Length: 265
Image (cartoon, rainbow, N blue to C red; front, side, top):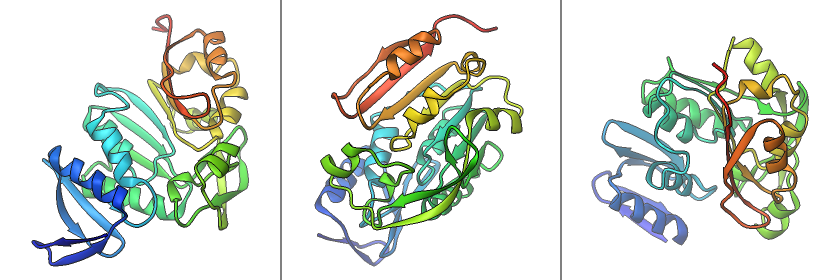
């Protein structure tokens, strides 16, 4: 479907689902600040976000984060690790909601560049650090599976659900560098991770299962999207003194939210 933007004089081709999401965003206070054949910039009050058109789920993610408020709203003075930052929308949200520091990881070069654009466009360089890295249980180099049609689904190890149920076609790969949670904590001298967000298309299993016992107490809250069933994730968190307060989703894909049971102060 083609959308005519009269104010900017731009005509953009959009999938029906994207168009419906855009209408919902416009009804929720956003407006179109600019567009070209590949991207659209949305504005709402004092902030702007550039997102992709024709590929990926950027508009849907903006709706989830800024309208549905999937990650919550209170990040005052928190240190956030944003794993799977995509175009930087979640990092911008955390900073706008008061986070004092956001370390964001996005391995796919196209998404990484978009994230940098969105951070700079909103003047948040002093709060958000975007790294062109993937999270893993080891620091290394790895092949990263790429879907040109669905870049938000790119993954180190695509799960069966991503490939079969979501019908994602991976038609390429890039070599990327990986890092670990302990490496990030050490390099950036982080005394406590107040909020760990994991939306990394399957990396959550490898990362959490191999996270050293002494690192767990440094993490206060985890929100992750699981992509191949809950498996042992909830039990793993409970074993490390975290209470699972919600696990909305189905048996294959959903969101798991856990917080630390006791104060570490």
